[in-house]
Length: 217
Image 1 (tube, rainbow, N blue to C red):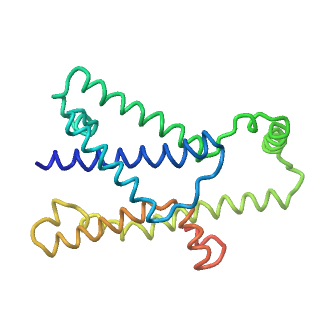
Image 2: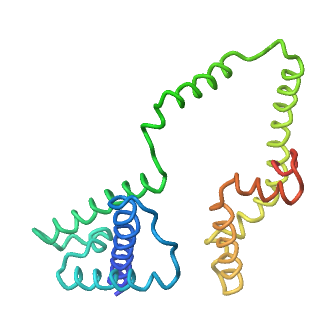
Image 3: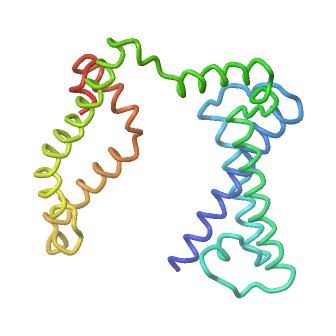
């Protein structure tokens, strides 16, 4: 029963994903080369309906791609082939969506103006100005500062992470409701904090404690 429910939910998500990307990316940006309208929460309703219909159809026809992903190989012949084709379509749609959303432009990358700018950058990197003593002094100071930032970050994090490691261990904290609650809360917090880019944390701490080595640490 659990695997069936998982397959249904995954099929719905596949249907919703395909509907949203084909409509908002392929229809607007690929075919008509225009921006999709701003997404409002009520716009999700038709996508959810399409996802539910997709899940119902593939479940009824025995061609569920989600069941194949979850390890069910009972479908054979055309049904198995359909599930595999849905997988390839998902990969293709995701690649094209990523290309469009990331605004990849190979022509701009190799344009004369961009190549000239890149050439200037690499020439400057490969030909440092050693005659500028102030620049050399600032560089050495920054290197030393960076090493101490890493050292202090590690020194302060070690005792905290040592304690949290035990409190976040399932085999240690699964004995009763109280310990399981602590384990669950800590796992949610740690998963949340590590899912945020370090650069975003740097911006947050820069605003919090002003620019300098301290927010970096």
